[in-house]
Image 1 (cartoon, rainbow, N blue to C red):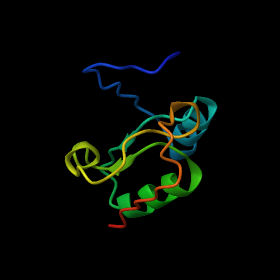
Image 2: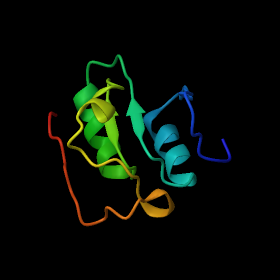
Image 3: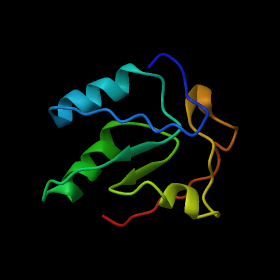
Length: 95
């Protein structure tokens, strides 16, 4: 993927290891959103590890709707994808 996708497209990347996924994410521009799905029993550990080792405008673990459904949360990205909402912080802690 060379550019951000603006449209009804959800790219799905399958990885072999957590380290491979983090390396891939960190080699790209910071994403507007990062959705992680895992059937591992240690999904809480995986989500926390990804939150601590990547940066994105929004993040959901084993869910793709919460990020869009909670209208009170900012939606704008980070870095070059930012929409100038840098002063706002709205963390959701469910893990």
